[in-house]
Amino acid sequence: MITPSLLTATTALSALARAGMEHMVVAPGSRSAPVAYAAAAAQESGALRVHVRIDERAAAFTALGISRSTGRPAAVLTTSGTAVGNLLPAVMEASHSGVPLVALTADRPPELRGTGANQTTFQPGVFEAFVRAQVDLVPDDQNPAAETLDRALAAAGGSRTTAPGPVHLNLGLRDPLYPWTEEDHVFLRNWAVELAAELAENRPARIAHPWSVFDESLVRDSPDIATGGLPRDIGTTVREHNVRGGGIAAPSGENHGKRTSTPDGVRAVVMAGDGAGPGTARFAAEAGLPLLAEPSSNARFGTSAVHSYQNVLELDLVDQVDTVVLIGRPTLSRHVANLLRRKDVRVLAVRPGPVAWFEEGRRDEEVVSSFHEVLDLIGPVRKGWFETWEAAGVAAGDALRTQTNFLPALTGLHVAHAVWDACAADGAVLVAGSSNPIRDLDLVALPGDPVAVVANRGVSGIDGTVATAHGVGLGTGRPVRVFLGDLTFLHDAGGLLMGHGEEVPDVQLVVLNDNGGGIFGKLEHGAVAQDERYTNTVERFFGTPHQVSLPDLCAAYAVEYSRADTAIELAALFAAPLRGRRVIEVPIDRAGLREFHQGIREAAQDAARQFLAKHPAGE
Image 1 (cartoon, rainbow, N blue to C red):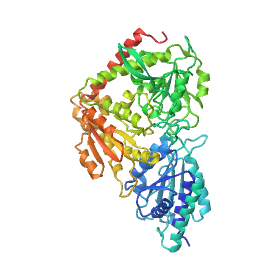
Image 2: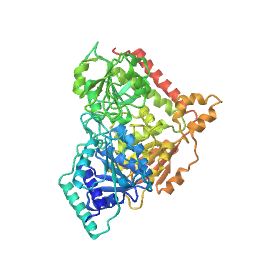
Image 3: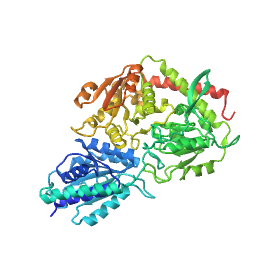
Image 4: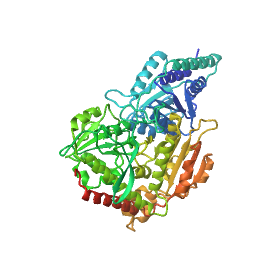
């Protein structure tokens, strides 16, 4: 007789593999041991790739990075008790991002629950608000169990009414929890070999595309695909724009497909939020509309992306907007949120299927399923509309960079610009940390060559960024460059911990170290801090300065360390091949950050206003 816990484990892993899972992340534990033994056998046969992480939270975000960057379910395995609770942040992010993460949790069997048994809590339903399906499985009969698992895993891919997202498989496992008879050993080996042979014949397709509203891959393996994972035929020719008497290179093309413009045509903009996808850039070029693309939209390239669009949104020009074509989820700007709430603006939301982050009826908008519908609805574009936005953006961006380059020391904007350009040059996937880094990218990243970007914008937390990046590297097989702040890095420093012999992705972590939480200085708290009654309070509770030595921390985790104090040093580090794991610390000063950003915004907006005063929209 085969040990029942091993039958449960192999049934669960078979169902996951047949649902498309290729990677699994295991956190050690005793109650989950039967699944770990089955996973080891599956890895040996080539059926699965298995990764081990000591910290359950890091394991969960590693699986999240794998799943998000591949569109396939990736499971994270934990033992019972508090280990399960450590998965919650990643499950929340997966839920709001539409990522098919699988929380595979071991539990005591029903007869031990509620008896005071060690390491036992209420695991069924613990993720109820965030998962697409949940199963509490104690399979005495494997056939009904397999059917139940198949139904639950199908929910991870979404449906006509539900977006893709995480599922929770809770496995009640009885002793013994290990293979202890010769029959068990033979069973595990034969099961794994047969599963590998089955998958070799029929490897399931991915079940989700959480990086894009449409079914477009983030990174594809094809000779027709450029280094950044996007089609080669996207134009990136350069045209010089005469703005304020100077020239700045901006991406442009001939736009043969641009639609007819008329003096009284629509005054629309395309807003590409997180996950909009590369098709959005192609649509904006075809429609002849200005494209406002966040970095993690994966649409920030091509002929229509507006430079420094955040500054243009603060001009009177935005009052003329009558239509917004919304793709993806914008999360970086209050100005965008205000535009979407305006009563005089028509919002056409392009959603071919349900999304995880929006409830119908919560905002006044028209939902359409394709870009073709948008073209039919908006009609001709106002003459000169795109050209006005394009030139205003160039003027603002030119002034912003000029103002920034007056400073003798590096700033977050310098580093963001260098990181973006490095990824465009070497094809590394960019993982953007929350808080200031992704906003710095939004201000200065030039829409030239496409860059593949992943960011945890579902709930926009700083937790799990390091582990997510490792997961992206494991899932895509591509080098990964991470741009993150010091607090984000320290919050997930455990994500660096890897056991001996584990598969190590190529990950470069560029840590913008301002010794605390610089973003709060740019928010209302920065103004409060100017009142001496609250200066110390804001610094302690929001600035949160620390004295962590990053070289020592990296040495403890056996990660290479470098420091860049100048743009030349940073460029030299980026010029080297991205191999192995390295932290690049870039120290900056957050004192005066609020005033600095106010100054560059004023310079950028003044330059754009001067241009618009001479060249009003439509003229």
